[in-house]
Each structure stands twice: as structure tokens, then as C-alpha cells.
Length: 246
Length: 250
Image (tube, rainbow over all chains, first blue to last red; front, side, top):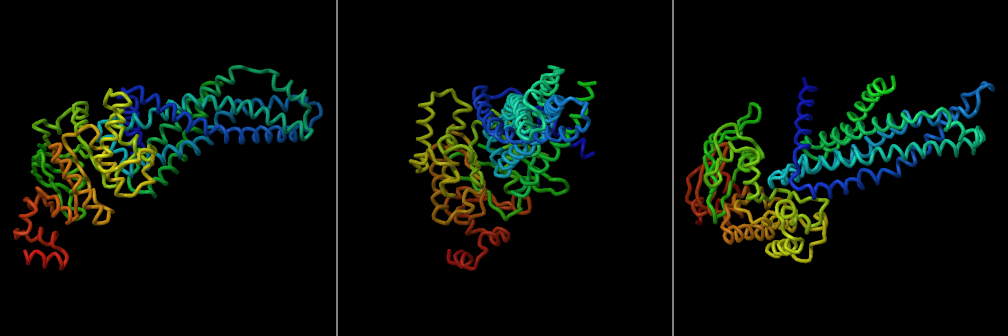
């Protein structure tokens, strides 16, 4: 029953979010600001995590290959596919749900409890659209870029760690990442990233928008935003993988 | 003129407003007073449409606000300015952008014209050289004044103030009260102020509506309060021994 209540309220909120903006020029300006806040400011964490995860996947794969008949270039192939299929879309999505999702929920939640959203409503502004639409658009634009950056940096991290640890030669690794390359995997990862971007921005905004009370409730809304976004990302990961890869 | 006719509002089983009939006229400061939890904030928020009322109607100069479509309400809201209890300034924007915000959203003025209007409003609330500061960098009293400036930006016909003096020292509170009164008279606005500050009542209460347990219990001017025999009103207004003495002296 509670699930249906939230589903209905979420759908109603999304209807308000996607209604006609008052002044498109101002919304566009806000979207550019959000691109920086939600997208550009997330590049650092994506770079660091992607590099180290790529490195770890390479070394783990290398230590699991005990059979001397298995060619070492498969280390590169394994790293590439792990990163492209799962890490750069799903894991980066989970990380962004933590960073961006909590940011969105706490920002909108604080605006709610300090009556800033009421102030927008009193002025005759569609507060849901004004606050949430730019965040969704910015996430939909920038998260695929982050996903792509993550792919490149993850594969590079794998190369750097593999060569530095001496578990694979540079030539073998580079051959491996080119071997049996399926371009569709990039599209698959980008489709997942787009869906996750929408989930992160909209679910977190929903949690923030319906915050009532004070600072404690804002904190709780922020936690709920991360938890629900993560659960939905994992569930949709399974669903999309089933739909797009099988 | 704003009229509230037979307003009822409940939250779940709790009836907060019971058959409220009020009229607020232009050019005077109309005060809604009452104890915490009496329903005065719910009444104010119902008048501006932040709460939907269960029964009755609200009219703005004869226009039925209650039964209006969302879009028609938007047009009336452009004529409304509101000062919130905490100021409700946009924390991510500086003072200039806060005041300019309604102008950006609803006018086609050039940047120079908007800036001129912004500076005029800030000057009117006696704030200068604060344009580039953020709300967190100014005092509570200054935040309230910025909030009034923002509410004034579009030259509203109706001004609502929810506890404009809360958290302010008595001197600053009087400055805010007088400012509200001055602009009310100057622009002939319908001003409704929600307060439990007795200094405000005595200072600017042209018309006072006392809400008690969700009902309109008493109505009159600040001078009428001294002559009133209404027990609940006297218990509320003259709660301290000093104010009781004052009433006797009067």
C-alpha cells in the first residue's frame, strides 16, 4: 500500500517536472549550472575509482590464471569486458547515487524545510520543474560522458597495474583489449547509464521534495535517496542485462 | 481586498480551522494573532493557497481563488508577495539575485532595468552595498529586509508576512514592523501579518484578528484590545504581570 502511495506521488511529481517551463532560457542556464555541480564535479571521483578498479581487476584476473595454456592477453580482454559491461555503468552509477543522489536530496530537502520551495510556489513558479528538471537533464547529458571516461581510465588503470606488477606485458594487454571487441557493449553500457542517471536524479529529487521537518529529516531523506537509488539501479541492471544482452 | 468565507481545514482527524470568516482591506496592516498551534499559520498558508481548504472560499478582489484553475492561480500569485518566518531566501544566490529573481522569472525587462528595480527595492528597505553578499553572510534582521525587498520586487497588490519578527531583537523587530506598515500605506497593498509579538500588535495593528482554537475569536483594532472584555484575548495579549498593569493603567 505504501509502495503504491509513493509510486503514485512519484508519477505525479514527474508530471509536474515535465510540464512546460515558465522561461526556457532560465531553465537552460540552470541546466548548465547543474552540469557543473552534478557532472564536472564528479569527474575526480570517477577517475580515481575507475583507475584503481581497473588495476585491481587486472591483477585479480592475472592471479586467477594458473593454467599456462591460457594466453595472457585474456587478462586485457577480461579487464576490458568487466569494465565496459558492468563497472563503468553500474558501479559508477552506484557511486554517483552516493555522491550526486545525496547532494540532490539534501539540497532540495533543505530548500523544503527552510520554505524556499514555498517561496517559489507563492511566486507562481512550478517549483518541481524549476528545481528538478535541470538536474535530470544535466544527469542525462553528463553521466554517459562519465561512463565513457570511466571505461578509458579503467582500462588504462589495468594496463598500468598489470605492466607495473609484471603480470602481463604491455603488448599482450593491448592485444587483449582489442581482441574480440564488440562495439555494442558501449551502447549497452550507455543505455544502462542513461536509465541509472534518470533514476538517481529523479528518485533523489523525490526524496528531497517531500521532506518535512528539520535537519534530521533532511539527513534521513538523503540516506533514503542513496538506498532507494542503489536498490533500483541493481534491480534495473538485472532487468536491462536480461533485455539487452540475451 | 481579501476575503475568507467559511474556511474549514483539517489535517487527518484534527480540525485546525473552523468556520473562519475574515476580511482584509488595502492600505492597512491586518494582523492575525493567536497562540502557537491556534491555526494562524495554517490560515495564512490557506489564504495564499499553500494549503487547500476543505470548505469555504477565498476571494482576492472578488476573484474566487479557491475554485480557480492552477494557471489562473498563477496569475494571482504574481500579485502576491510573501515574507516567510525564516526569510526563505535562496541560499545559493546572492542578495542581488534573490531580489532580482521574480523579475527574471516574470518580466521582460532588460538587465539594467532589473538591476535598477532591485537596487530601488533594496534601498527602500534601507539596505545598500550588500548586493554581492550571500544570505548566510548577513544578519537575521537584514535577511528579513531582503525578503521584504524580494516580495516588493513585482509591486504586489497583496503582501503576506509570516512571523516577520521571530528571532529578532525588539529594536530590529520595530524597524521591520514600521517598514511593513510604510510600504503598505505607500503602495496601498492588502497586508496580512501573522504574529504573536505583542509589540507588533501595538505598533502596527490597524486591524487585529484573534484566532483561538481554530476559530475567529475576536476582531478589532489595537486600541480596541485595551477595552475588550474578551477573556481569551486578554489572557493572550496581557499574559505578563507588566502588561496586565498596563491594561489597568489604560
